[in-house]
Amino acid sequence: MLLLASLFLPWADYAGVSQNGWELSVASDVLYAVVAVLGLVTAFTGGRYGFFRPDVSTDGATDILAVAASLVLGWLVLFDFPAGAGREAGIYLALIGAVMIASGAGDFRVKSVFPALPGDDRAPR
Image 1 (tube, rainbow, N blue to C red):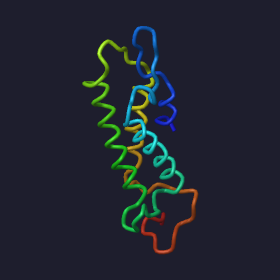
Image 2 (image 1 turned 180 degrees about the vertical axis):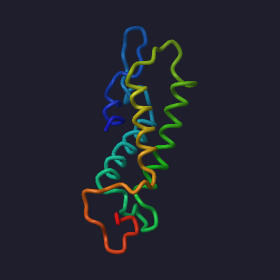
Image 3 (image 1 turned 135 degrees about the vertical axis):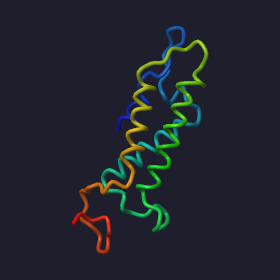
């Protein structure tokens, strides 16, 4: 939720003009939105449902995409930020949100609001 909300917060300030995540990122903002939505889906379902294939869970897809989003955001903050623009709090919150999703989407036996599926080896014992 933090990553999605941070897209609407100011990320850069250039000569008194503030830009949010949607305005600053040309194409990667879609990646951040997808990662945020997948993070919410994984949190609510426990990541035990297939993602287009039965052997690829939403948990794995979320983890891979969140790591990619974290790397892209880290690169943007450190090396590729627009010259002369000041970094605002929104970009740091986005980076924190992406890292939180990447670290929380691993296979950590997440409890879910949905009942365990028959034959699910991830069910609590």
